[in-house]
Every structure is written in structure tokens, then in C-alpha cells.
Amino acid sequence: MRRLVICIFLAGNFSVFSQNPLDIIREANEAYSRSEYSHAIELYEQVLAMDLAAPELYYNLGNAYFKNNRIGRAVLNYERANRLDPSNENIIHNLNVARSRLVDRVEQRPLLFYERWWLNAYMMQSASGWGITAVIFLFLFLSVTSVYLFSRTRGVKKTAFYTGLLLLLITGLSFIFAQKQYNRLTAENEAIIMSPRVSAKSSPSQQSPDLFLVHEGTRVIIRNSLGEWVEIGLTDGNVGWVKKETLEVI
Image 1: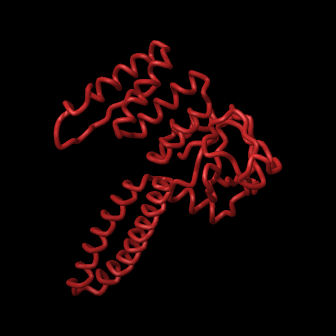
Image 2: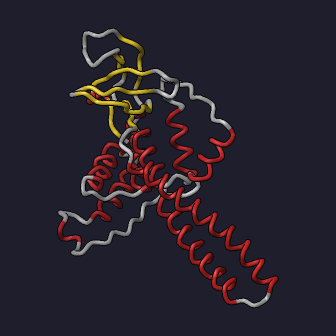
Image 3: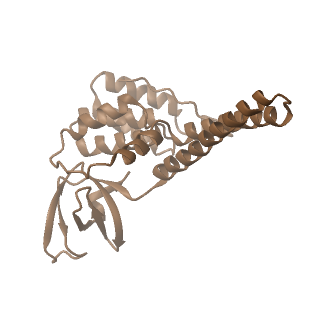
């Protein structure tokens, strides 16, 4: 298990908490190393209740839930870690391992080659990573632009012109990818089924016919909500209504 180190910047100090969050995290890590997974879960959740979050924290919590054989909770926390750090290979690996333990094997529509390229491209970094990339290339673009404007050499101006176009393109794509990742990070339309077995209904009513079954750990898209019911969609095209209490938003 990876050790968790989180730098927390606050206007005050840790006295606002009953206990230093870093101490709680260290205690949770030690509990995990002693195979006291339930205690580790309790401590990690305590830190999250302080509105402190990091991909490593969700990752470690997912590991503890997985070891405790609570696969739905493990998938939920791996998904949350993946949102914050989409290029982390450890998170992706453990998420895939947890998914392999699920009952449901939902078929997903194959992506076209350009959809795969687009998805792989913006998933290379987090929103903040792409934002930093955009700022760096914008600075380089402005520098090259100044060379183009003030140089009197034809060859240098031509090179600066085409280099500037390339840098401008990369800057634009980086801003777009940053926005895509930000939207993905803040979206509340994806959820994980938490109940062991749920019957999706044809309408938001307990008396309506059952359409299909979903099991714990399955990822769904929230399409609509009505009272205590939400309309969910699966990647295979199935759509139905389930109780809100049976799922948790990523």
C-alpha cells in the first residue's frame, strides 16, 4: 500500500480539529498494515468527513474496503481517486481488479478510433495538470510571437510563425482538456450501486414492472430524478428507475 502524504494549507492551524488529520492518516496506515481494515476504514472516513480529500486518500480507503470484501465501496473510492488522478496506474489497476469481482458484466459500445484518441488524450492528466500545461505553452507562444514580431531575418520569422501556430494549437487543446477534466471531476451524474441486488423499474413506482437487475459495484449514469427515485442508464443502453438509497454518487 502506498503511504499517504498530504500537505494541508489552512488559514489557522490544526487546532480547529480534535486531532491532526495527518496523525489520523498515519494511524489509519498503521491499522491497514496490521490488517485491521475496519479500523483503517473508520479513520480514513474520519479524515474525509473533515472535507479533506486527495487521490491517495481515496485510493487507500478503496484498498481497505477491498480487503474487507466490500467491493461496492472499493469501486466507489477507486473511481473517486481516478477522477482526481486519472493517469495513476496503481489506481487504474486496482479499479480494474475490483471491477473483475463484480457480478454484472455490462457491455459497452465500442468507441470509434477518434473517440478513443480523444478520451486517451484528455485522460493523460488531471484538470490542474492540463491547466498548468496550457499556461506553459501560452507563455512559450507569447515568447515565439515576440521573436516573430521583432526579428528582421526572414528565416527566423518563418520558423517563429509556424512554431507559434503549433504552440497555439497545443495551448488551445490543453485548455479544452482541462475543461473536460474539470467537468468530469465536478459531474454528479455518475454513481455506483451500493445495494447487493437492485431491480430497475419501468417507472418511479414500486408497483411498476421490473426491467433488469443491477448489482453492487455497477457504475450507472443518472439521467433523471423524481422524489426518492432516480432514472439510471447503463452503458449497454438499458434504462430504468431505482431508489436513491441504493446508489451513491461518485
